[in-house]
Length: 58
Image 1 (cartoon, rainbow, N blue to C red):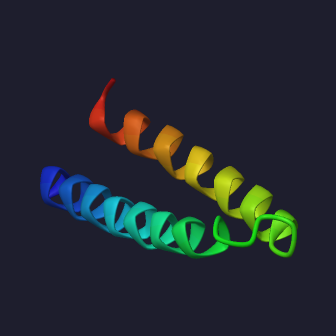
Image 2 (spheres, rainbow, N blue to C red; image 1 turned 120 degrees about the vertical axis):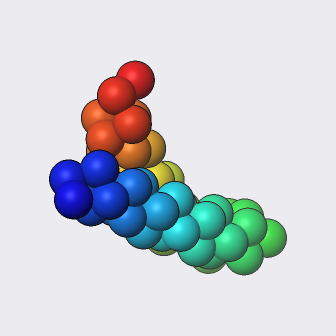
């Protein structure tokens, strides 16, 4: 049960990271306009990657 929950959380985190990367790809087209969004999204990705690594045992 614990392993299933861990795998489920990892899957959710991976999906969130993919979605945020899509956002960054949109924002990067106009970096001057979306500077704050780029910074916020980048920070969110960093946090999610750290969470992913903790759950994945790396």
